[in-house]
Length: 335
Image (tube, rainbow, N blue to C red; front, side):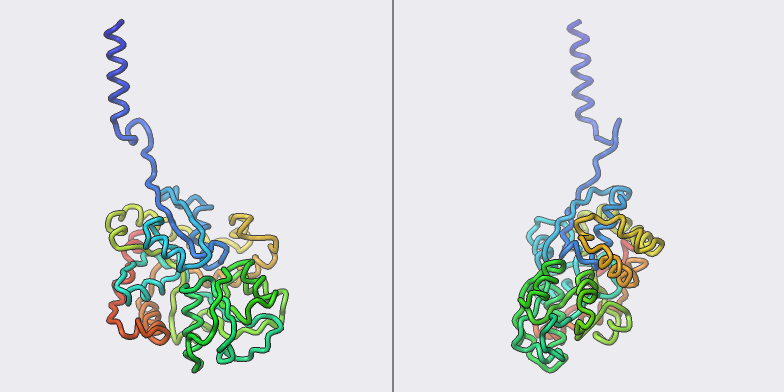
C-alpha cells in the first residue's frame, strides 16, 4: 500500500512538471493594449476584434485598457504598463524626433477622421479666428492636438496661439461644446455626427473623414489608427504581434462584409451610448475610413512626416528615417 502511495505521488509530481500543452491546452499569451479613447469610432476595429473573439481565435489573450487620449495610451506603453498602443500612427513619427522609436505593425484607419468644428453659438468663421480661443482636444499631446497646431500654422497663425483643453473624445467632448466651455474642438465620430444631428448648422472648419477631405487637408494620404509598440517588445513577442495582426486583418474583412447595423450590434452598449440612431449614422459615415487590408502605404508615412515637419520644429530639425516607424511584414503574413 505504501508503494502505491509513492507511485501516485510520483505521478502527480510528474504531471505538475509537464507543460500545459500536454494533456490540456496551453494558456494563450496575454497582451495588454492601451486605447486612446475606446468610444471613438476611429478605434472601433480594436474593440470589435475582442467582441468577435478574433484575438482568442488567433491565440492571444488581449486585455484592452481605455484612456482619454492617444498621448496617455502611449505613455502607458513607454512606461511599461501596457504592451501595445491602439492609437494614431503619427505618434511614431513625432517620437522618432525625440529618439524614441516605436513601430506600427497594423494600420486599421485609412483616414484620420479628425474634424475641427466650432462650438454652437460661437462666432468663429475661420481657423485663423481660433487664435486666443479655447479649443478642445482629446488630450494635450494627442493627435487631435497636433492636428490643431498644424491647421493653425497652415492658416498663418501661431500654432500655440489657441488655449488647448483636454475634453476626451465622446460624450464629454460633446458636453464641453454644447455648454460653451470651449470655443471649438477637434472631434472624432461619433461625437461629430451626434453634434451635427442636434445642431444642423454646426460650422466645420476642417474635415478628414473621407479620402477627398483628407487629401484637401494634408495634400495626400494620411493614415490614422494603428497598432504600434516598442521595437524590443516586437522582437521578443513576434508570435503575439502576429496573432494581433491576424485578428485585426480578420476583423477588417468582417467590417467590410457586414452592415453598419450588424457591426453596431456587436459593440458594447456603453460605447454605443443612449443615442443609437446617432451612433449608427456616424458608423455608416466611418466605414469607408477603415482599411481593408491593414497595410500602411509608404506615401502615407511620408505625408505624416511632411505634416509634422510643418507643425513641429523638433520634427523638422530631426533626421528621421520614416521607414523605421512601421512594418507591413506581420500584415503580409496575415494575408
